[in-house]
Image (cartoon, rainbow, N blue to C red; front, side, top):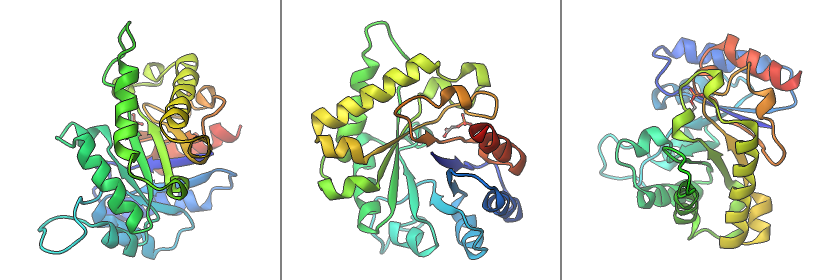
Length: 244
Ligand code: PGA
């Protein structure tokens, strides 16, 4: 499976980010670990060549040039990252629209970065309107993409109601399995069968060592932990629980 660890803004010191990355590089596991430190720490930890892949947590909508404070896809890929998280709900909460997300996906792919596209509803309702919300997030972000590029797309399903909570508040196994199937259906119906097979699907939202095993449902390709990835102890425990 794939584990994309999103450090968010938990680690203020580059040495702490380096410690987690190095410890992750030493784990013996069959899973692929990709870690997303802050922009400022990215080049620093990349230079340590710890043996794990790196991701940025966001990127600019601009290609480069006169855009003060922006971090372009090219800067990210030249910093040593292979992946970038796009459309995280914490960015969407700060005003990132589906159209901004779509632009970022294109920028990332043109810089040869793999995209971890985050989607997920704020709440679930009895009429299941959240399913159209997820569909819209996926289709709008990916509609302009060439079929061959879909192998560089990973979808992280992160229901907002389950992010940053305790183990008991993560999604139930049944609901996760059903949503993974739903996302595959969206990919097949709005794109192609080939696209559905190419895109990997992750789950994020209060994943930790206690609940990860029960969340390893059929069709799911991995996880996007936040808090549990931001210390070497909790990350190690998570990976060990997956391997157990
Ligand atoms: P969490 O965050 O694991 O701390 O709930 C997940 C995410 O927002 O990516």
